[in-house]
Length: 259
Ligand SMILES: [Zn+2]
Image (cartoon, rainbow, N blue to C red; front, top):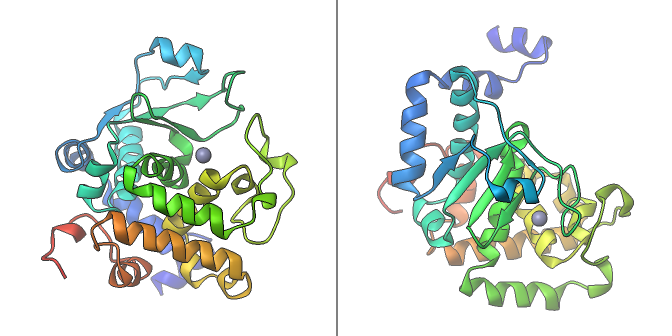
């Protein structure tokens, strides 16, 4: 009965229950999980010279509820990876910001985030944390030394002519093409991989009809899963993806005895 009522007003059970999972006491736990569990510091306010240079708009101080929810959403996404993989990736800081206008040198306006490899910082806009975190984390993982083989295989497997090239590219100007999660993946293989990871980790990608009809995309998802299996020391295996699809990958999932 409860389900029917909620369905009729368009509220997803999952969204509602996860909203109620957040309380002020979870904020401290989330911050501790990111810092002590994964080695990642959170940064929100306080402007830096880098912000001016790259058109970063800093968040005003959040109220407690906003912070609880925003950090909770972020921690929920980070939890999907084994903490040791987050540590190994070298990611040091996640910076939640209000907006990214971009700078004229290498970024376009309207981005949801970016990864700065010098400071090993992921920048993410507070209202689009979920898929953006995975996208930027893919860039962070591509900097790992053992990602080279995976990148090389990717470049060898998929036709170079399908990529439109780096630079100052607005996604809306790129034509859609099968084999790609979204047009932005056509910029280069690195963006292709990042869009595949964001799709894989935030949606029902594995049961999507697109995988049945789009063989190239299916191949990309397989390569990405092989990559995750390798860099996670075997933890992100077939069983993990089964649990993931059943919604069982929550806080504490990785603390359980090795399978
Ligand atoms: Zn990207």
